[in-house]
Structures are given as C-alpha cells and as structure tokens.
Length: 366
Ligand SMILES: NC(=O)c1ccc[n+]([C@@H]2O[C@H](COP(=O)([O-])OP(=O)(O)OC[C@H]3O[C@@H](n4cnc5c(N)ncnc54)[C@H](O)[C@@H]3O)[C@@H](O)[C@H]2O)c1
Image (cartoon, rainbow, N blue to C red; front, side, top):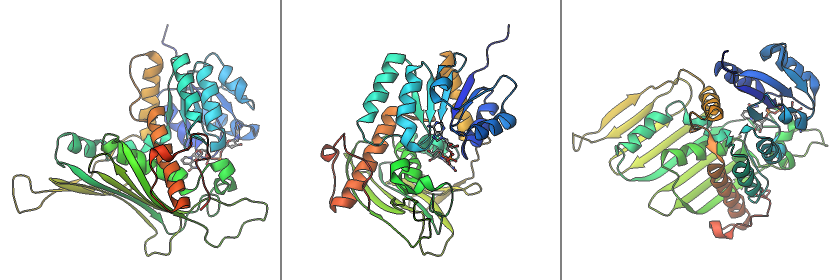
C-alpha cells in the first residue's frame, strides 16, 4: 500500500490561501479540509485545489477534529491566530500560522504549553523571507566573510500601499483585528530575516517611532488606527545594531524600496531584494586596499512556502525538522521587539525587555 499523503487543513480561505494551497500541492499534500466562516470561499478553493474527498466546513473546531489532517494552516485575520494555533496543537496537529500571532506576549505561554503537551510544533510565516538570497548570505556569514557584523539596516518603503486602506480587506486597518499596522503586517518578515542571518542575537533595547495617519477616505464605520510608518533601532548585547525602516505610504520618489544592508569589519553587502535583483558583497579579502565585488543573482526555483510545507511533512513523519519557518520561540522574540517598538514610540524613550508587561496589548496607537 502506498504511504498516506500528508493531509492539510486550511482555516481561512481568503486572499493568501491560494498561495498556501498551491504550495501544499507542490509539496505533495492532499487538501483534506477547507474551513471558512464564508462557505462560498471554501467551496471555491475546493474547486481550485481540492478533490472529491475534500471537506468544506464552516466550523474551525470541526476542521481540526478531522483525524486525517496532519497540518493545519491558520490563515484567518490575526485576532484568531493564537487561539486557533493552540486549539489545533491540542487536537494533535502541526500548525503553520500567518503573522502576527498574539495580542499580548503572555499568549505565547499557551502556545509553548500546547506544543509541549501535544509533542507537535507551531510555526509561523515571518520565516517566508528565509528563501531567495537568504541562504547564500547566511553561508557568507557562517564562513566568516563579513568578520564582525556591527550593523544591519533593513528598509521597506512603499509610496502607497496601506493595507486595509489602499489594498486588501478593511480589517487590516483595525488594530482590534490586525493587532498592528505595517510593523505586524510587513515588519516581522524583515526582522525575522535580519535576526536569522545574524544568529538571533539577544536584543537588549529598542528605540523607535511610529507614525499615523495619512489622509484617507474610508466609510465612517471602518476603524482605522494602525501605524503606516516605523523607524526602529534595536541594540544587542554585542556590538551589532539593527535598524528597520518601514513605510506603507511615503511621499518619496520611488514606488517601492526594499533593501538590506549588512556591514561587517571584513566585508559588507547590499541586497536589493525583489525577484530579479542581486546581492552584492564587498570585501578586500586577498586584495588589501582594493574592493572586490561578488554579485550573486541567486534565485530560489521554488517558493519558500513550498519548502516549509515539505519540512512540515517531514516533521509529521518524524524524519526531519522545520527550519525555514519561524519557530514559536523565535516568534516570541519578534513580538517582543514589536512590543518594545510601540512602547518606545508611545513613551518617547528607549525600552528594554524588562520594561515589557506580558499581559499588556502589544499594539499601542501612534
Ligand atoms: N493577502 C496577502 O497578500 C497576505 C500576504 C501574506 C500574509 N497574509 C496574512 O494572511 C492572513 C489572512 O490574510 P488574507 O489577506 O488572506 O485575509 P482575508 O480577509 O482575505 O481572508 C481571511 C479569511 O478568513 C475567514 N475567517 C475569518 N474568521 C474566521 C474564523 N474564525 N474561522 C474561519 N475562517 C475565518 C474570512 O471569511 C476570510 O475568508 C493575515 O494574517 C495576513 O496578515 C496575507
């Protein structure tokens, strides 16, 4: 008899579910259950990605109870993420959940406890940026080509692309549902990449500002309170400092800017990310006083989420580990930096991890 295919359940069949379902199929999954409070959306995904056995349900509890399901993908609006992740773990499933994850840092305790008692793992999507050029850059770091890295700068600016205002459903603009603005929506990806590349150094303080709003035209019953701009400086216990600049809207002269700069005392690199762009590594190695440039146009043939679903399938079988997605411990660190950012902006001072209140809302309106 042939081995059972890894079986996935998707909770929330909205915009991003198409990408997840496509990657699940590429990774050899069967789509076992499609769940959405709007049954029509789940039916549509069944037509596009399912088979005759794929179940369509509107109840999350029913979806995670399905004995055939190995991996639950949580793709609902963020306010549901932590609760659905914990419930799916407790139902004995591996979980791959979209970002952001929690309203308070304390909620991670329940995730860790459910992982421990179920023996299953919860993984999160900020690691989505660990594909593409990232493994090559990481190899340079591990080979010591940078020397001591003292500065990482990550910048993601859009001229106009406010989630929930210019694009996507309105819930993105409402902190009650989205749990944050550009920091939660995009910032977590860039932080994950920067911390992953530098081995997750301990963050000792954050100084930050966030900004809102720009003029907007939304129906009066649509809440809009999330930030569209953030400037963050994060110190570590060593000499390395990170800066993150994020903007969903800015009056500047480029439609979108997406760069990563990593500077070490032996070499440095500039990554202009995007599909066709390259990373440039500068060094004087072997040629003192002369800059040597390596240009690497390293393209990952497959989507990072396909690799993550393959890793999850191996974890289900007990034959491998999930390395490309963000672990729950790493996700906690990302949310701590988020919490320090909002608190620093609000209090207009540098914030340390010990200043954080585990039970407080991470999001604070700018
Ligand atoms: N849209 C994107 O380009 C994109 C990209 C990356 C990540 N994400 C993340 O993916 C998540 C979902 O975003 P989206 O754009 O797909 O949103 P969406 O609004 O298009 O889809 C969410 C779906 O969840 C359903 N839903 C809501 N509550 C539910 C519940 N309790 N149980 C079951 N279904 C429920 C909704 O009916 C909807 O179909 C968010 O965390 C977002 O940050 C989105």
